[in-house]
Length: 249
Image 1: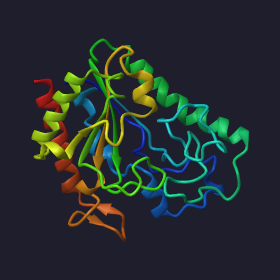
Image 2: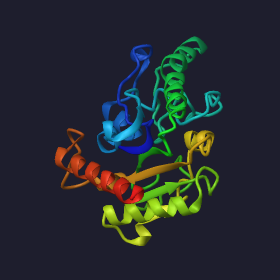
Image 3: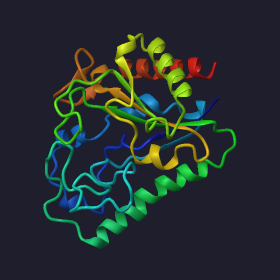
């Protein structure tokens, strides 16, 4: 078993029943705003000491934001009003009572699971696991730029030391058969709220971003059905497991 905590905050697709009747997103818009199939890739189940994930889509509750990062000040905060592509999520603004319910039922339990897991002395490192669009959307700091195959974020050395991060980078390069330039550190993402808030408290954290080009492209992905060939997801999971084997060896 790997001595790791794996967090998968954006892998869910479900709409919370509390807001079901207010949502105006299409299935495609919801898909585009999520980290689709990341649970299939990163959830290695009983091979890790702990896996924390949610089935609620990030469009509705985003565990990788601060709990007070709320609309209307930030439309891409913990409870959003627009997707990362600027698509309106709700028919009308949510009232404070509904927002509180969403946080109490889906946000805070996610963080409690992380906090409980971190009490386990078997855990030596934690990974916050994501996917990223191959070309950055407008809301991103790298708008319109093509992205690397894999990006590792350690909050510029604050959540994890550079030596450990570099060891993970080399493991990804070997396991995924990539070139040196295809696996970056802190570019374009240095780490979100989860990585920043828990990094080195008490274990190091690294944010992992896989380029969706690795599976949401031909010949594996069907744009009409929004489905990916299971064999490709299994292959990527095996590559992730191989990465961990190399990293912990």
